[in-house]
Length: 210
Image (cartoon, rainbow, N blue to C red; front, side):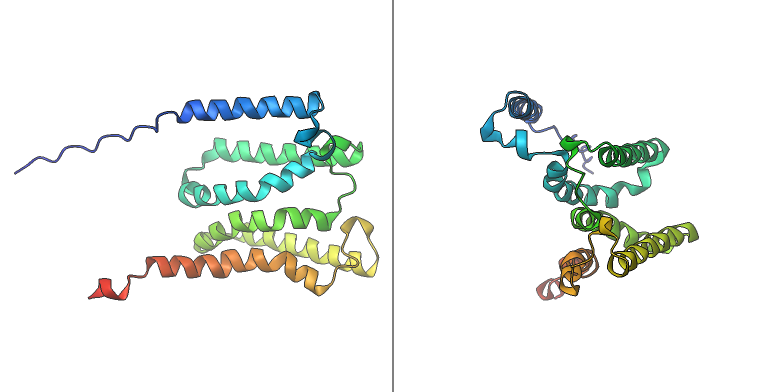
């Protein structure tokens, strides 16, 4: 009997750390030149606020994070959960401070609730809905209560925005088509498109059954 050799560990692709270091150094130089030295060709000095960077990076980060969340959600652990919680808390504090003190570099002042929904609904749906569907059997009452609170808060904001002209919501003036445009992609992608593609990819082809 031939003894099978143990699989050799895969080596990292050569040059990857060097390429990453060069890319990071190049990005730092461009950021320094754009914000600190006023290089107009970068467009950073007058246009690229934190809000603009969120628009640029939110969806790519969500697309990259979704597979990781699905594969390694069980190994998240308390420390990583705490780190994520602290990061979210720090971001919320930054948003509050940005509005309260009118920090122009954040780009937050002037943006209403509708703008935040346009920014975050699709990325959050891409990350959270597949995880929710996979863990649906283990959903606990506090998960349902949290989701119900979010929906109730949105309903209150919608009623206030349209009926009482709450300007901070930015809802008044948006039609049903605008709401469909806001939610149709986040609902179709995780709830319809992804399951259909997954079922199609995992179903054996007819010639493979023979």
